[in-house]
Each structure stands twice: as C-alpha cells, then as structure tokens.
Image (cartoon, rainbow, N blue to C red; front, side, top):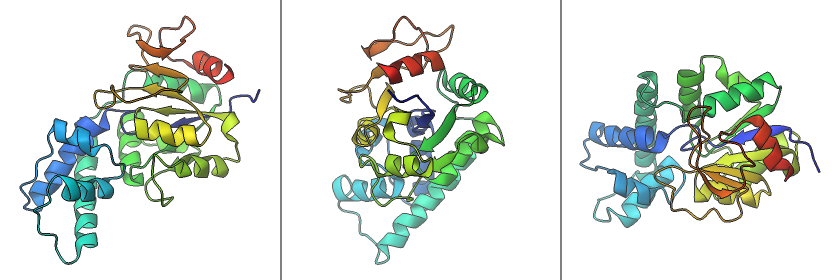
Length: 253
C-alpha cells in the first residue's frame, strides 16, 4: 500500500461556499454592469452548476434557459468579457471578507503544513479566483503552501473529465495511489474518481442530493473540535472532525 504523500483540494464548494456566496452574486453584478437584465437566483444557479467553468456556464444558460437572447456577432468575446467582469467582482467580494472558509478547512491545511504534507489545488475555476480566495482567507503567502495550482483552462477538458487531476499528479511526479482528493460535487467526484484517486466528499447545499457512490467518505463538512461533522456515508472510524490522522486512515483503508 502506497504512503499518503499529497492532499489535492478542489476549491469552489470544498474550501469555501464560493458558489452560493461568491460566484453567483458576482455573475449577477457583472450582468448588471453590462446592462443585462439577467438574474441568477439560487434555484437557477443550482441548475447551472451542472456545467463546470464560468464561461461554459454562461453559454449553458443562453442555450437552455435564455434562448431568446440575441447573441452578438462576436459571441466568444462577449462571453469572455462577461466572465472577466465577473472575476473582478468576485475578487472584490473576497477582499471585503464576504466568503469565509468552510468549517475545518484552515485547521486541516495548517496541520498538513506542520507535518510537511504536500498539497495542491485542483479546480476548474480561474487562477485569479484561487488567488483571491487563498490570499484573503489564509494570508498573502498562502499560495506558496500549495506545490501545484491546477486551475482554469490549463487542460482543455474540465471536470468531470479526469484531465486536471492527471495533470496535477504529473506535475508532482506522483501516482494516484500517492494522493487523496477532496471534493464537494458530482462532477468533481467523477473527475477524481476517473483519475483513480480516493476521494473524501464534503457536501454543500447545492450538492447534497448528488450521487457520491464509491467515495471513501461523505461528510457534511470537515468539522472542528467543537463543531463535529455528520457522516453521510462511509466510516469515520470514531473521529468527529477531519484531521490528518483520519485522512491517512481513509487513504490506507
């Protein structure tokens, strides 16, 4: 059995509730700034999360939910511009401290650093969004804690394709047996699972009904010493919060 060498973290929904509290309002701010009357409420956004990637999500919205919109001739640049504006608003929300980390995330990352565990970010969100979250929640030097930031369009096929995980493992010179992934959604889990990675899931309001069959452990959150997680599937082996000892046990099981 391989020894655990690295923790691979998804970002949106896993490290923070960025979809509900960050990306959705930032999209709406970008739409308003562009003079569009589009409003993505929480219910609609839950449906749009079927697609990963911000630009892809805008296209999906226009293809399925707003089919009467008259697309401009330079459609690709129109979508790109909206997404860039959204990223600017998202960064602003981050700087204002409106998107905190989820329960247990900072503690687990700190423990991993203290024990010399290698870490990477593996996400479909843009590098700028990753930077905004890490810098404004963990501190200005926190990006350097992660050996690899696999983000955005670094590979053509986004989650649920396994490409982003495979790329991250290659950059770290690791095999899937050497690492474990942390995800929150069906698409994310399918990506890590297809890369042959053992995966721990922490659900959120948008993903609580997703199918996580085959995941090693499904929790409502990572939890704290005074804020226990709820085990939804799998064996937490007597633990009440996700620490490195439990992660190692899950990886070895």
